Each structure stands twice: as C-alpha cells, then as structure tokens.
Length: 237
Length: 295
Ligand SMILES: Nc1ncnc2c1ncn2[C@@H]1O[C@H](COP(=O)(O)OP(=O)(O)O)[C@@H](O)[C@H]1O
Ligand SMILES: [Mg+2]
Image 1 (cartoon, rainbow over the protein chains, first blue to last red):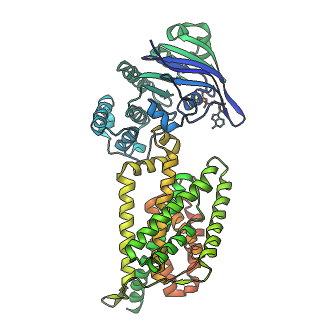
Image 2 (image 1 turned 90 degrees about the vertical axis):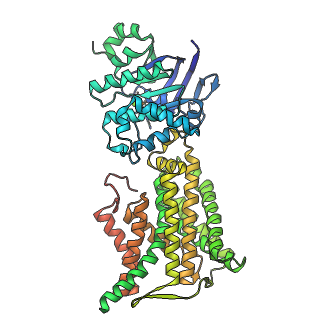
Image 3 (image 1 turned 120 degrees about the horizontal axis):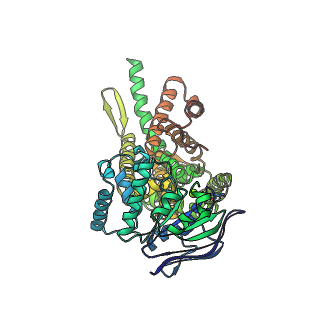
C-alpha cells in the first residue's frame, strides 16, 4: 500500500509550551489509523498541525508526496485533507443544509455537490429530515453526524476525526464507528483520534499510542489491543 | 392632538436619523463579529466617505447616485487598506493592542483629513430639490425620503449578500468560528478584508447622506455619530446584523423624541444613558444571547 501521509519528527509549541516532542507516524492509502492517548497527550494538537492550524517548529509533514508543513489551513483542504474537529464545531446558527454547503466551499461543481449531498443524506438520514433546522438545535449525535457529513462534502482523500465518540451514548458511539468503517470502505483513508481506545482499536488497522507529546507504542491495532501495556493503561485492565 | 402630532412628526425625523446610525452600526457590528474589534476609527471612515462624496459632487460634478457609489467604492478600499496595514499585523496580539491601534487610526484619519481639507466645515451642496410632502398635517421632506430609500436598499442588498451568496455564508461562518471556517477551506484573511470593505462602504453611504441631511461636513464630524453607532450596535447586540439596524432606528427615535419633548441639549446625553442602561440591564443587547462574550 502506498503511503499517503508521512509525519517525520515534528515539534509543535504553544508559545513556550512544548506540546508535541518529535512525533513520527504514517498513514497508508485505504487505512484506518488511530492515535490514542489520555487527555492532554497532544492528539488534537497533532491533527491541528496536519490541518495547518498550527505550524510545526521542526520536522516535516508529507501528504501525497508534497510537503505541507506550514501550508495554510484553508489550502490544506484543497490538498484533500478534511477534519472533523474535537467538539464537532458545527456552525450552530446556520441550517444543516448551509453547514453542508460550507463543507463544499472549495468546490464549484454544482451537480456533483448535489450528488454528494444526497450521499451524505443517504448515510445520515436524520440529517435530511432536519436539513432546514438550525444546526445548534440538533442533538449531540446528530451534530457529530453533521460534522462528519460536512467534512465529507469536500471529497477528502484523508479524513481526520478528533474524538467522534466524545459525549455520546454507547449505542450512538457504535453507530458512529460503524459509519466510519463504512466511509473507509468506500475509499476514504481515515486518521482517527480517540480516548475511547477500545472502540478505536476495534475498527483500526494500525494504531499509535501518544503520551505527553511522544509516541510510546505503535503497531497492528489487534496486537496492541491484546498487549499488556495498552490493556493496563487504556483499556481498564 | 398637538401631542400626537408632535410625536408622529418626531417619529418620522427619528427614523430617518436612525437609519443613518443603522448604516454605521452595521459596519461596527460586522467588524466586531469577525475580529472582535471595536473599530474606533469607524466614525472617521464615515467622515472620509462624506468628503469623497462632497468632492465627487463639487469637483467632479457628479449627481448624487454616482457620487454615492464612488464614495462607497473608494472608502471601501480605504477600509481594506487600514485593515491590512494597521490591524492585520496585530491579528495574534493581545486585544488591547489592536484597540489602541484603532484609536490611533482614528486620530490619524481625523488629522490627516484636516491637513488636506482644512478644519473649516464645508457646505454640502443641495443635491435634491427642497421639496416636502404633506401626509395629512405631517411633513416628510425629500431628503428624508431619499435617506430612507437608500438605506433600505443598501440593507436589502447586504441581507441578500450575507444570507444567500456563497461569500456571505463564508462571512457568517468565519464570524461564528474563524478556525472551523478555515477547515472548510475559507480564507479568513480574505473574508476579514471583505468585511472591512463592506462595512466601510456602508459608513461612506451614511456620511454622504448625513452631508445631504445636515448640509455641513467637517473632519471631526465622525466622532459623535461613531460613538452613537457604537451605542446602537451594543443596544441591538454587538455582532448581530438585524440588531444593529434595530439599535440604530431605536436610538434615532429616542433622540428625536428627546429633542422634541425635552430639549435638543439632552439629545446626546440620551444616547449614552441608553448605553449605560443596556450595559447594566442586558449587556448582550436586545437581540443577543446572554452567553455571548463581551469586551
Ligand atoms: N491553545 C493552547 N494553548 C496552550 N496550550 C495548549 C493549547 N491547546 C492545548 N494545549 C496544551 O497542549 C497539550 C496537548 O493538548 P491537546 O493536543 O489538546 O491534547 P489532547 O487532544 O490529546 O487531549 C496539553 O498539555 C494542553 O494543555
Ligand atoms: Mg483533544
């Protein structure tokens, strides 16, 4: 399989705070890769750096053979990377439809956008029923679906998901994760950040474990799920 | 009868004055919405707009509509330049730095204008015939009608842009959550620049209309309307477009009533009494949610 994203030894700071201390990871075409770790480990910072919201002080990020470290966030989307941010961050004062339209902001192919909108509604039927509703009035699970649908509207090659399970009931988490698997099967590569290691490892091909800005473990998701270290630290036994 | 008569007449006056405040307040509120800056130079942008309109009419011999358009375009560009040179470099600086810079820009515009156009007030030419219409025993003059017509038209255009166009949706998205807007592929720098352009163009229109209404303009004319438009924006709920319009109209009406029933001496005081009252009773303004962050 071809390497799609290759991060090499990046360091990211918030002012004087050294949040990412030399991370390297790679995502191959067609994979679901998960990045797990406790609160504050640096998972969101890693995704925000890939998306161009933060700039690494050192190190390189290559996406589809192109160096994208330091490229502005609004241009990263055009390269084919789309992010579902932590806490969903939907545009609460706009309608569901407008949120999806904004997801397609970089595109001008009207007919294809309409088709993709149908595809999103097919995947998330509850969004279609509520398309005229203000996004802020949706339930937590529906907002997560909207954030995912919105991210898909740019037709990403790589989808970054930041804690999609956050604040959702177990049944809903299972639904969201099965949709993630579905999205992956239809050709979108996924980099999934989670605190819910159990769920993440159950759908991922490979995994990285992040601890205070450093990767401490990595490998096959099934093997990691079975390993003593991961079970103790992240799987509650 | 006399009371009702005066009341209705003052309401007519109040709405025309208020619609001008509303035009200025829209720019305040749009700019605040997107970069959380109280742009203290906004009143001076309005003054520059009035002068550009003045010169377009007196020097270039334009009639009112082309003069208004020229003023809006040139002032819109000025707004973009100010943003790029003065505010953009401070995008990640503490908020107080950019606020102080706005005050500096305000002085810069006032005194640079004074250097070029002299501090002497100019008489704005009468661009439309001095006609008035009698509605029963009430009087509405041609200028008031024109002010109302132009402000309503501009607000309709603005509403269309913000609600229906792709750029308008990007503006609303960036105003709600700049970072997430960037994740959609929206260039927030471009949106901010455009917001300054539109806000400044609306202020320019207000400047020209005020020139026509009061017949006189001077380089410090922006100070008071700038402050009042700020009050109007806060009254409606800063960052909220319909709030700015409502706040402007309400402020205009209150001022007209105070002038009509008390004394015009208290007119300006009324505006600031409202500001204090709003900040005490409902700081998020008439249209605001209470959770909104305030400066
Ligand atoms: N805006 C910020 N300013 C300063 N420090 C931050 C900021 N955001 C995150 N951090 C710090 O960076 C570290 C990593 O945070 P984050 O990437 O959000 O972790 P995670 O997503 O794994 O919970 C934490 O120590 C956090 O306190
Ligand atoms: Mg996080």
